[in-house]
Length: 308
Image (cartoon, rainbow, N blue to C red; front, side, top):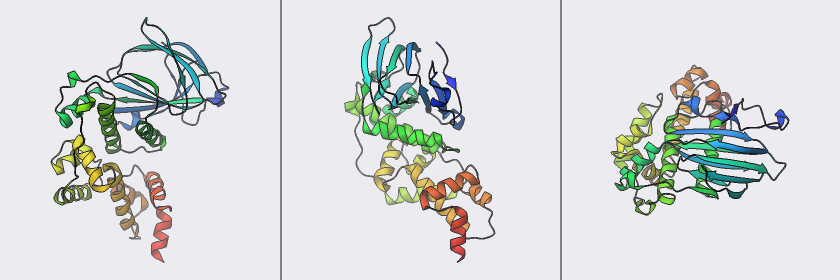
């Protein structure tokens, strides 16, 4: 099997003159060091024959964007099955090897997002949420289907990897937990045993979580650490936290960091680089990007506004 080409984000398929003969990797989360989750984006060639995907220990989810294509796939030495793939179609695979070939049906280039989810995370989530024996659960293979929630999570991860400084493990782990829960509930042989827990966190639990976050905003907070404050597994915590607050743990922590940055910016003698470090942003540029996205103005402009 030919290895995928690797290029920078700025290099596009059109810039190569449409001469791609294999998938072209242009974005990857691997440098971000996310746990339980790897996200990669590819430019796809207009036509390919006999592309082999080896077996993998992870669950694989592929999201298609751009032009339509006719795709044929088969398991090793099995019969070919033909699919018409369109914008936001998905392929879900449990890690088994397969062969694929395709041909573009459009002049619009096709891109794919590949999400590899740890099978260990899926097993842990099954045990924590439903007390299931992971050996009794198997992810069902699906191809050429649409699922709004899977697409929403995939596109959000895609946008995050495009950022100059992707978010830390809290963001990735929250997304991975959401994926694991949805896959367990909707795409496994034993999904009917996975049930939602009613209610959210108590006032005391929320107070402990908030105090912990405030005391550790300058550190790379993990989902497990937050869950421990409420006495839950990370799987239960992520869902109950959203029920209690209406936002994910990552969104909550990011909002707390933005609010702390606002308070520090009101102090004229604190350099912007120091503000970024105190709020656990990768650097001043990352602070500026997040600040502008949430408040509509840069940290420098906010500081000037406070001075008047």
